[in-house]
Length: 616
Image (cartoon, rainbow, N blue to C red; front, side, top):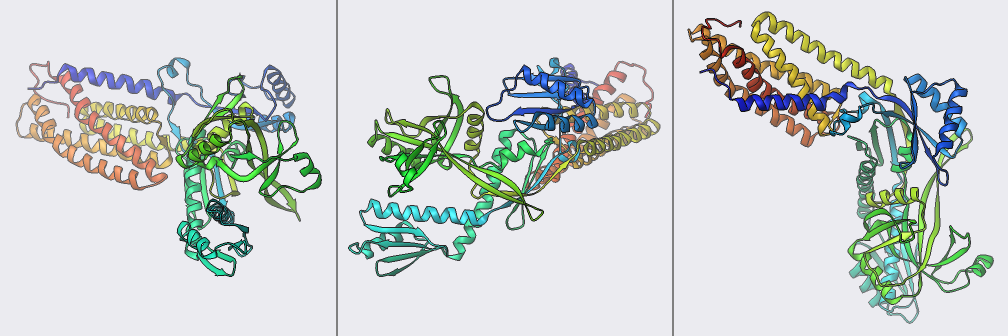
């Protein structure tokens, strides 16, 4: 009657082995480290390694190792403790100068033989591992001005495409758009065309003037959409960086909170998530650019730019053919000459415009403008004032050799710029600029204390359970304790495999799942004891106890799983961490309580022919 198939033993052994293998990386601590990355035009090589060693020696810091990764373009200094990390960071920032970015980091120490199996440690949240906390303010006025500029440009295109002569179409200081038509132009037709294409705008016709205004409801919607798009873009950019379980949420009407676990230095994170680099493609205007630069007289419809490579002036048409905002995807690559490039794919509308332009301009030049918004900080009256400088440089002027549409490559960048620009274009552009109004670093020492407290809490819960079960259920208490230990290993392994993030609420979920596992084992043990009291033979009591308890355990745990799924689906941040560990823990506890403990009990008692009593 007391039977257990061999294939189930094989499954138990396989699950325990794989769980132990993939949970093992979590016993290897991370090394406090300092990462050195080169700025534009500076190389990371053996000379830098030697220089870093000299700087650290002068500062009295003896690192564990200094690892050079030329492919990634960085140098990693591993240190013994957090105090040395801080000391090394300050020494390297002073000793290396502005040509290098020095960032705090945490380097893994998992052996290579484990990483070859894809084993990696569990990710830790901001409250456990440390990281950075940003509060960013969205410049909603800039979003409104950008949309008004787009409305004005669209109005010019409508009038131009329909051959309606106009003197000017400009955005005024009060936020309205004024179109001044030629005295001979058909005002009624122009107004009808603008109304059909831009129905949201409120128009007022006076003589040869058409004034267009954006209604207040639309202005509010533009502001709200700007924040929503910025949150989406930030999430995409942080995914490109590779930060696990970031927290990105709206705060108030114009602020966004960003928390990045594991990131110990704000410089790299700020550079990536706050960047607004993009591309714009323009046709080249015929004319003497040097004369326009000298006299300041620029042809109508043109704008003067500077060529990055030569430093000379370039005249480009103000009308944009396509921009980075219209790109579907972008990849860093190399051109036929082996130089860094960005391969881009435009959306359908921009691809159609590019096809029309190249079809009509084969053999003529097209310019590519690299637009970057660079943050600046200066002291005014003893207070820090944050501003931004917009840099627009022509990175490429080349003849259109063949007709193309959605897919092409852009050159004129170095490798680091190409990589960064590809990531920014893939993640999308910000609808409005954002300023960092608050930034905090949550140190790993605080996280380490939280980890120790969480592990201590789970450990004490396990020890108290062990003592209770051993005293109350004796041999079956030992079986239950073994199952709880396997349960912990399985949960750790699953969360490590799927890249889930452990937070303090996650520790709470883990402790709760242990409690549910205890409940399941209590049900089983009490059922067995009840059958023994009813005079059922020991072996039959074990089998009947498991069979009768299984239904109750399954029903109770399914409701717990459903609650955890609901928390994960509709919750954010800490709630999702709690729900993740709870669901994984419940599933693991069902497996260990119903399968593992039954297998152990069967192995211990099934072959004993004259079994008269159980130690329960």
